[in-house]
Structures are given as structure tokens and as C-alpha cells.
Length: 331
Image 1 (tube, helix red, strand yellow):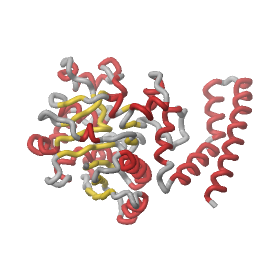
Image 2: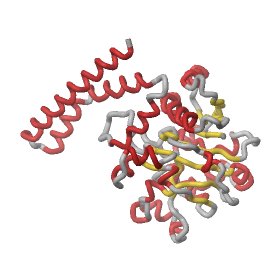
Image 3: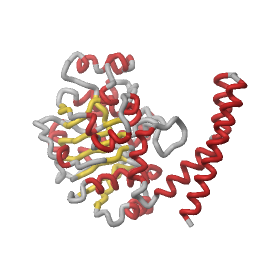
């Protein structure tokens, strides 16, 4: 089984969690991981391999060189990094001996056997995909540029805008019909104004040749699942690939949801678990004042804020206790 992922050095710990989850739930499979990167050093790669020690996962690096003039044009944000574009080079970089590959975002975990997905009959299509955002993305929820550029696709009742976090890719077919130049040409069509950078481009290029698989099983967004009434136990029982799209469970910069616990289930199986906990607790403690100040600025309700401060202070004390416990476990 060949797994493709894109990452920079900062995201390698989370890639290790994802690959660990693949191994745990696919113990009999021969797993080869292909890492698309442009800045990962030998030391960084050694760190990743050490995190995966004993798991019998072969890790191969696929180095990407991007022209500076192009990277300046490519839209990217804190949540959409430049690395997300690297999968568009897969036909040039992945060896010809690999004719099928499973692309997985780093912010995913595999929670069950991939055998059924891996053996899916692609029926001559470009790739197997899942409807975006737990099936919630529609023409009405798209931006104006997306509706304009995907107008022909949206007129087809069989088409659903898909998420690019999980792609079971027919590399043999892609090499015959597409190249990185295909995607560059598509970006020019969009005048580089994509909303969901390479995801928009993949939808634009491939919409006629897709096989859909169930998002509930193979690309379930945790926050959307919570909003749709699913519990963490529902995900543990029914979802094979779980996607932590948007803000991440390891960051304390937003509201968290019970369905995010699944990521911590697998993080606990890695050597970085205590580091993840320390980072999360530190982030929670240092953001205390900024949280209070931002809420005060937003509401202007002093009495309510005093009550909030008291509650946050209690939470802060609990975090201090958690920090002390982590230090004890580390010693």
C-alpha cells in the first residue's frame, strides 16, 4: 500500500500520528509512505523515521522545486500551506512503478482497515473521492469565483464538489492524460483566485472522471460530524478516515469538540504524546489574557466578563494542575 502526503518540517509530528494510525489499523499491509516536501532536511527525516521506529513503514522523500515567481502567485494561508500544491506534481515525482496511490492529508487519522478502499475498482476514472465537508458543500455555499469556474460541473447532477484530503489516485491514468502543466494552465484560467487553492483546481480538472465513495467512512470531518449529531463513539465505530479540517485538535486557538478526541487516541500511541500535551497546555495558559481581552472588546459587557474571568480562572487552575501532572509523568 502506497501512501502519499505533503508536509514541511513543522508538520512532521502530525504526519507521524497519521502514519501510526495507518499501521495500527492495517497491521498486515506492506506500507510505503511517499513524502512530498521542499524544505525537509535529512535531520528532519531522521526525526520522522525515529517516530515511526518499529512500525515497518518505508519512508521515501520526493523533493519539490518551485519557481519563486510561481509561489508568489499561489494563494496560501495559515490553514492552506504551499505544501498543499505539491500533490499536483505527483505524476512527475512518484516513480512509474507505482500505479495507484492513496493521498492523505496530514491532519487525518486512519481509524480502520484500508483494504476495502485500497482495492476499490476505479472503473477507469482518475480517482476515488468524497463529497466535501460531510456533503454540506453546495453551489449556494460556494464563493462567486467557484460557482463561475465550476459552472459546467455544477450543472451535472452526478457531480459533487469533492474534498482533496483523501484521494485514491489512478496514477497510471493520470500519467497518460495529465501533467503539472495541466494544473498550471487551470490556475491561469482561474487567474490564481482559487478559494480552496489546489482543491478547486483538482475539481476543475477532474470533475468528469471521478468515482465517489462514502464520506461518512472515508473523509469524515470531525467538527461537521459533531454539528450533524454524531458522537466520538460514532466516529470510532463507523469512520475509517477521520479528517480534522480547519483548526486542529492539537492547537488551543479555538473551540474544541468531543469528536476531536479520536486524534488524541492515536497521538497517545506515538513518542511525541507528552510533547503534544505540554504544547497544548502551554498554549492554553498563555492565551488566557488574550481570550478575556478579546471577549471584552467584542461584547463590552463588564458584568458578564467578570463572570467569564472567574470561570476562565478556574479553567486556568485546572490547566496548571494538568501541567504539573505532565511534568510528573515526564520525570
